[in-house]
Length: 52
Image 1 (cartoon, rainbow, N blue to C red):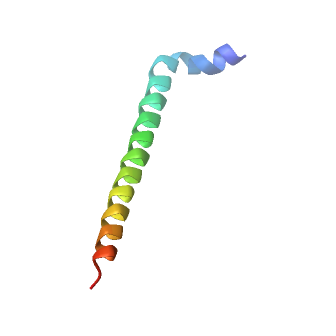
Image 2: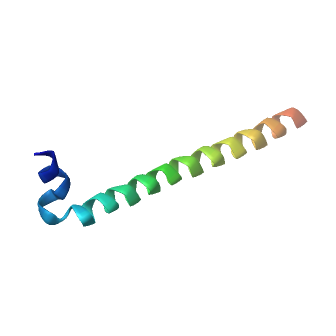
């Protein structure tokens, strides 16, 4: 039964790579957002240390 599920009615060769590409894109978006947040936090900390 699991072989039928993985085959997805003969379209598994197209569906699973699409899931993989989507997962990689989501991981990349999360990583980019996290890196931008760290850079902004670092800049904010530097600006707060300078004072008014």
